[in-house]
Each structure stands twice: as C-alpha cells, then as structure tokens.
Length: 175
Image 1: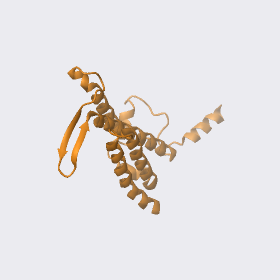
Image 2: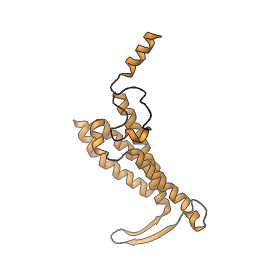
Image 3: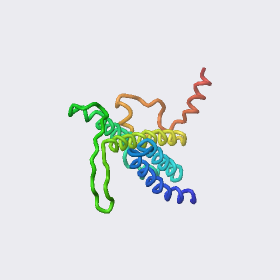
Image 4: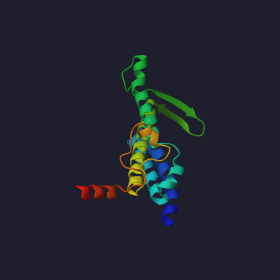
C-alpha cells in the first residue's frame, strides 16, 4: 500500500523532471532521450505498484502508437528542410516573447527531441508491459491490441489459458 501511494506521487514528479530534461536539451545536454527514459521509468514504477490490469486503465493509448507518432515527428523534422531545398536535419529557430516567461527560443531541434522522447517512451513502455504481462502468465497483449500485432489468418502459438511450461513438458514426455 505504501509503495502504491509513493509510486503515484512520484509518477507526477518524474514526469515534471522528464519535461524539464526535454526542454533543457536543445540548449544544454539532456533532451528527448534522457527525458523519455525518465518518463518510461515513471510508467514502469507505476505498473509495478498498481499491477498490469490497472495500468491498462491508466494507459489508454497503445504505447507502440506513441512510438510511431514520435518516429513520424522525428522524421518530419529531419527531412522537412529538404522540402524547401535545404539539407536534411538543418535546424530553424524562432524567438518568441511570451508574457510571464520572457524570451523563448523555439526551434526544430525541440520538435526533433520531442519525437525522440515519444519513441523512447513508447518503445520502453511497450516492451516492459509485454514482458511484465507475459511473466505473470497473462496474454502479452490486451484485448484491444491483438489485431494490431498479428494477421487475422495467423494462429496463436499457444492457446490462451494453456500453460506453456505444461505444453513443453508434454512434448518432452512424448519424445
């Protein structure tokens, strides 16, 4: 119970740190990769505290789709300059004067880092959720995800609810 309460509080603190690292990254060391890792760690910690079934209610979007959006954003910022005849990965900067915040320097490097952030979070969370669900004997994918990772004509390797260790033992006994 204590771990669950601490994990819920730290979840938000770690995400604030992740956003700070993301925003700090385009002018100083840090950025999308380390911010994405901190965010993924927050999700992993929360999933260990709540369990995989409750995490499905917290994470309403498939993590692989988050990674795809990040990859698209990263590719767009990397190849976007070529549309206007510039070399790939060239950065553009805009200087904005925002009330209460002062002058902000916003550039394509921030969009690139945000894409990397989303890729790291999406891939890390998806891998950990699949491994965690499998290690607890659950089906690795949720009920909404099965159609996304296999073709409709494919058959499952093992039947749902069947213990893979028992199936292996049956095969050893037969051979």
